[in-house]
Structures are given as C-alpha cells and as structure tokens.
Image (tube, rainbow, N blue to C red; front, top):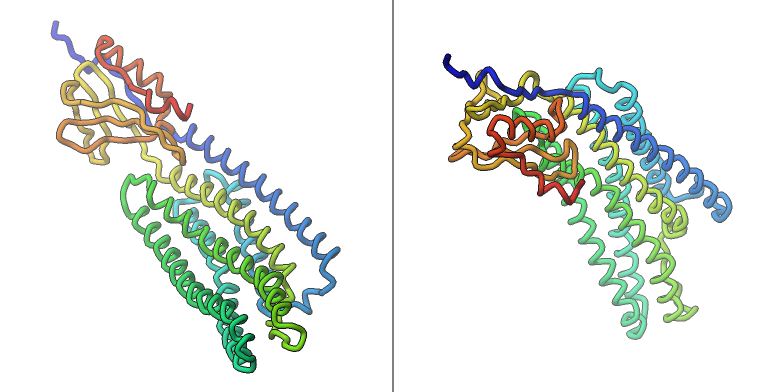
Amino acid sequence: MRFDPEDFASVVHYGPKRLAGEVKTVGSQSLRRLLFVGVGLVVMVVIWASVGPRTPSDWFTTTRWAAIIVAASLVVTAVVVVIEKFAFGRPSLAFHTAMLVLLLVASSLLLVPVIMLAGIVAGYDQVMRRFAGTLGSYGQIVIKPLLGTLNGVNIGMVVAIVVVCAGLLSAFVALFIWLRTPRSLGHTHRKVLQLALWLPPGLMILCGAGLILLSKRLIPKMQTTLGSDDIVPNAAILDDWLIWLLLCGMLVTVIMFLGGATRLVTGAILLARLPQGAALRIDAAGMLLDVGQPEPQRVAWPAIDLIAGRPRQALPGPELVIGRSGQSLWTMPFLFFDVLPGTIDSAIRASTHDGRDLDLSAMDKII
C-alpha cells in the first residue's frame, strides 16, 4: 500500500472570532476614555466658572472658535466610537473607511484656531515693532528679545502648519495605499494615520502654551523692566489665558481619545478584510500556504528555513513567520487563525516527528 502524506494533515483556517474579541476590547477601552473625556469637560467648566469671571461672550473671537472647534472635534470622535462599538461586525469596509475619514476630519478641524492664532501673532509682531519705534535706545534693547521671539514664532507657526497639512495629506494617501494593497496589514500606514491624527491637537497645545507664556510671563516681565511710563501693547486674546490653559489640558485627553478611536476603527477595517478559507495546511510533505492566489503554494520541509513567531504590539498582534528558500517571508497574524499557536506547533512536531517546531522565543518579551 502506498503511503499518502496528504491523508494525515492539519488545516488551519482563517477565523474572525479571536480578532473580533480583541477589537471589542479596544472598543470598550474607547468607551471608558469617552467617560474620562466627559469628566474632563465637567472639571474644565467648574474651574472656568469658579476662577474666570469673563463669560464666553467676552472671550476674544479666536478663543470662542477654539472652544467650539475642540467641542466639535470631541463630538465627532465620540459619535464614531459609539457607532463602531454598537454596530460592531455588521457595517461594510466602506463604512469603516468613512469612519476613519471622519476621525481625520475631526482632527483637521483643530488646525482652524491654529491658523487664526498665526494671523494674530503676525499682527501682534507688527504692533510691537511700531511700539519699539516709540521707545528710546534702552527700551529698544529691552524689547528686542521679544521681537526676535515673535518673529521666530511667526515663522515657526507657518512652517508647523505646512508640516501638519502635509502630514494629514500623507494620512489620506497612506489610507488609500493600504486599502488598495491586497492582504496588507498596513502596519506602516496605520502608524502614519495615528501620527497625522495627533499632529493638529499637539500643535494647538504648543500654541496655547506659548500664548499663556507670553501673557503671564514675557509681557509682565518686560512691563516691569520698562517701567510704568511705557505701557506694552497687549493683544486682546492674551486676556483669555485661563481658557487656553484649560483647552490645552483638555487637548491632552483629546489626543488619547483620538488614538483609541483610531485603533478601534482600523481594527474593524482589519476584521472586515480578513481572508476566508484555509490559511495553511501542515502535513508530512511540508506546508500549503495561502498566498492570495487561486491555488495555495506547496513548500517542502527542506525548503522551509524559518518557522517562528514575530512580536507585534499593535493589532492584529504577533505574527506567524515562515521563511521560504529564495522567496519573501510568509507572514500572518495569529489572531487571524481559528487555532492557538500551540496547536500549530503541535501539528508541525507531529508532521515532522519532532524534527521541526514553532519558535516562539521572540515573543517572550510580550507574553
């Protein structure tokens, strides 16, 4: 009787259950962050109401717009998180992509107050230069460092706005490339998306901190140095330093919230793109690998030079890596399989009579 190694085989299929569980966990974490956002808003309002006697109608126009836009960004992000959490598993890939685009829009909105602040800085720079012309030589020496600082900030803000816009554009390009590439996990693309989403709130925090520093430190110090006879011009927005301080604190929470929402949506995209059918077959002759072609690829044991686990922190987590002589690595996340790594290891040992195994030593640091 002829021995047919195909009669004794272990087949590993793609399965959504384990990946779906991880995505649900990320969704629960995002909902908890939404609770923290709500608490942060309450604390912000309480501090403002108890310390700041000026009502929103008295704030400078840019300050009012900044508060409105931060609130709008939070609302859009919250809506995306709630929809993704409670509509889990049903929407299509196009729906999840639209949710990710909404997150990019929510973050991009925060560039509006930054651009408005850049215009204010440019105008204030001109005011201070005219003021310097009315001072004597000593006053001009005192005010010269501030003029240099304002000029540097003016140039820096323009450069920063251009960089952030380029980052947001790169995010849209990365999203397009990721979704256009079959079977791509998009590790690099998702990092670009995450960074781009953090850039606008991060830049707004820096701008708010600069405004507070100018209002509470630089101008009072210069006024003291010049003396009471020379009153340093004060931009109206500098009187809103408290609300900008509160907004900067809130934006730290916004960054964390955006990050969690992005992981939730990109995880849902990965789940929606999960392949179907058999991922690999393990038998005495070698392995049959799903390479995205109509037919799987047969690789004999002598041609397999690596069978190992590779650690990954971001979803979908650690990957199975199979090295094939003269070819690129075959990789697939363990969360995509319907079995655990130990089952794959047992199948490899059984098929090779303990001659080969699945090396998971690289994953020790994350277990």
